[in-house]
Image 1 (cartoon, helix red, strand yellow):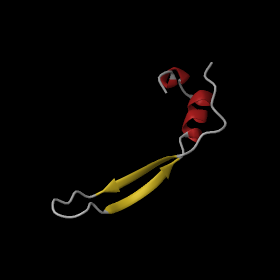
Image 2: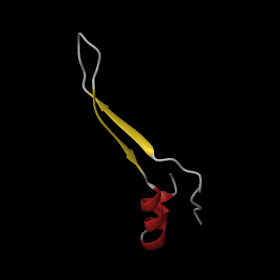
Image 3: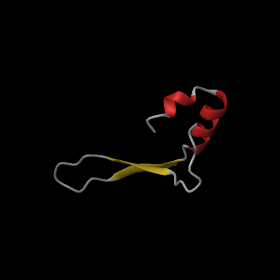
Length: 53
């Protein structure tokens, strides 16, 4: 059985543009909490797909 760690942190994703002659600018960012996905997959879905996580 897969156990879910209690001390997890959300993943932070940042999106930047790509400038050739100046610094890249941040276009946006998000924090993604995957704990609900893991929990619901274990409860209602196929927990086997989480073996490589």
